[in-house]
Image 1 (cartoon, rainbow, N blue to C red):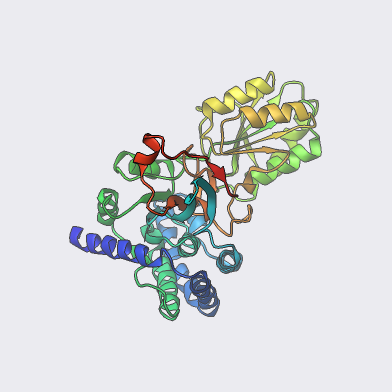
Image 2 (cartoon, one colour):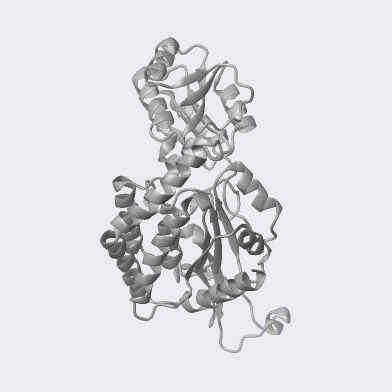
Length: 418
């Protein structure tokens, strides 16, 4: 098995070198071919997904997977529409590779360029959601990266069908390299992937806290992702009750199992409509918990912890103590408090009078995302194309040597050109 995975990783590395400077026209053609193929074969995908759902329902009944995992597994017409449109949207985006980020003349005839380039080979480990394959494959192609995907066993039939359709579309795209998008299935493949720092440049986990924790503890490869989504909403003293009710209900009920769903509600002790707010949440079938066993609980369901606080400062301290650095929001009409909250809350997304559910690459206009990152290096928040590129420095001279500058024969003038 190790040898098999090593061959897959070697092939991905070679593919990453071939796609690195592939023309944007070919990449866009590949993406549109994939979107068209999804449209043409969506019933086959639904049939494969139906098989997975039937098997998963048994696992739910046996307590082996959660209902929220089951919900993420399901592909319906709405998800399929978004999946197809997401690929088309990525095709329409500007090519993120080869962009000049800096141009500086160090001296006459000696010019430095900072240029965006792909990361290389991405290893993606995800649970449940089969639409992840289309999102990440499309983003990898557009950003000129190769990718190896490992989905959960609960979505194996759907994943296999989607990957079959993707690679069939890529084979029909003239000039597109082989092995850019590959898939593996077993736990042993995961173990081998985490050891494969010779060929894989970045690991991106999409799943629960236990999965991410395991990956971070068992690899030397850089990991991009978030361990949990403990999102908060703070309703300030001056909040509008209609705005507060609408935003909290959306953030909790629109998709309760999402990582950007709100898990804790903080209410200023002097908010005059607190009882009305809590009543409106209960009418929306939200179970309220006033004294949870722990404040860092990710429910993934219509359950919401709540707490009264003395001030915006106490709300900020609570979020920075118990939050996961994902997404947090303040509901207020006080601009000063909003600015303080957004500056001092240490999260990838900080919102003012808006639902935490907006933390999403598609909604940010990224086309899609490979995941949400709570890291403080390279990429943070919803990670789209820009987060899948890095940069290199290109220096163009005409026989320039350092010794001339050390001895004072020549001097740098560091003139920015853009």
